[in-house]
Amino acid sequence: MPLVIERNDITKMTVDAIVSAAKNTRLGGGDVARAIRKAAGSGLLAECRTVGRCARGRAKITQAYDLPCKYVIHTVVPLWMGGSAGERILRSCYRESLALAKTYGCQTVAFPLICTGRSNGRALRVAVDTISGFLLENDDMTVRLVVYGDTSLEEGSELFADVAEYIDDNYDVSDQTARRHPPEMSSPVRDTSAFLASEEMREGYSCGDLDSKQEYDRCSAGAFVDDEPTGKLLSPKPMEKARYAAMGVIPSDLDDALKKMLMQMDESFTQMLLRKIDEKGMTDVECYKKANIDRKLFSKIRSDIHYKPRKSTVLALAIALELPLSETREMLAKAGFALSHSYKFDIIVEYFIQRGNYNIFEINEVLFLFDQSLLGA
Image (cartoon, rainbow, N blue to C red):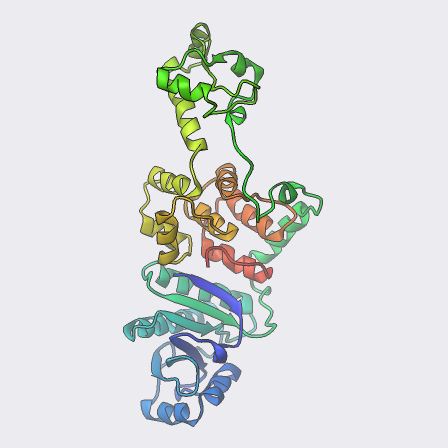
């Protein structure tokens, strides 16, 4: 992992292997293939002549010669894009190339966006779907999908128009959220007032009914804070417990809920993340794969209780955990961030969460179309 979509010159990328899209079985190709052969020098052309023909949808590998990578993988694309036959062969180009890269121990591979017709947006979807499917089964590889120059990708993208409309409806330059919680600052100190906000709840609590002297001492010392001047932990008064029981909350449950809430308030981002992974019944591997983040990065987060992640990493993990918008905001706050309608990036991610679409590769595809940074990668 992960899958990265970027605009770049594939002939200048320092990776283990780059892929050249050939247009005929003799490994000849279009503009990108010609650029690769030119940058590699005469040695590449000479070796290509020795490897023989290659069927459409299959792939062969050669040395890279003067290129900054180790290998060049050559795959022969279909004659046209569209219809089940053309797309089936196109998907095979990606799968065969990835399988060959894995066989040769490549950990980083760069693909050009293979287009065989006018629908570049549809070609992007085929590439993202096929590559992401492979990566979910192989977490020891990073794939860079390279779009050259100013190639337009909006046409053929089913989501582009819908997301654009959502952005238009929600974009608000006056949104103050980002100013209250700028990305470079930590989130504000959280206290029990968010949980015990109403006057009715505060009236039912005091510092005198805690379960143990140790808890009372912690309360009196201000270890837990309320919005009252006393700075003491609020606890249910005995005479109020019947009222909560009538509401369907038995006293012990209420006390447990309060204690649990206080513990979660003191969690770091890492602690919250690991708790939510357990609550979702996920494994670490499932989480970082679905988040499109590198295994090494996840290990770093897990081993450092005070780890300070980037906003894109937090959102990627929230997507992997399939958190609703409210819990996504809570996780962001733990890391010192907030969602704002002043940023298209935030609105796009919100669009997918609101619709229950947690496919991070599809989200990144749309983020790329809108020239935004990607999640996880």
